[in-house]
Image (cartoon, rainbow, N blue to C red; front, side):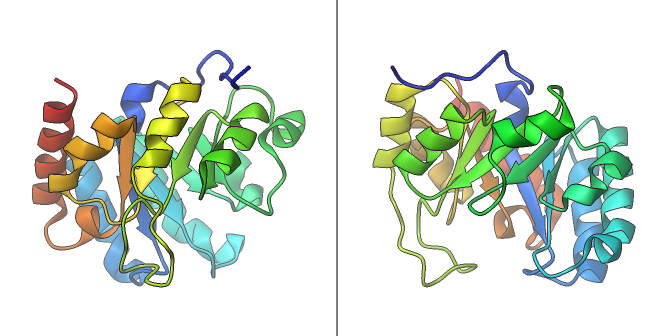
Length: 218
């Protein structure tokens, strides 16, 4: 039997467009105001990610964005940085390979926090769902400047996953506005992006991307 999610801890509609604010892509003094502007423009979900900063170093960045997300009514996703969960009270925690499995984390975090998982194959995504992931981010769908050495997996894993589970599937990697239609048609619930949201004018980007997502869901 294909794995299915428990009663949803996060509405799929809130996962249709995720902006990933990644401190490894742009320094936080420049990125933080871009993320705040995207939230003010209506970005429905923000993930805060930084693989280099310690929890103590990330907190002064993550806290203002948590408040901005709350004021905007946006979903706030914390990528790892487990010790900040109680302080930031994120809507979702995002994990990946090498982290405790979702069901193990629930033993410590309780049942109310949504947990997402970064997967790079259909099988890995299904394993995460079987262990209790509320959504999966599948990447890289297309070639991407942020990870030029990574081999794109294409659209078929999205279609394969959709045939086997109703869990939300988020496509990441090389996603642009003009590709949203084909990505969602292949089976993705939503898309996650870094450069397409925060490069250039975030407000214009958010409006254009939201239009593309809405058009694809008609």
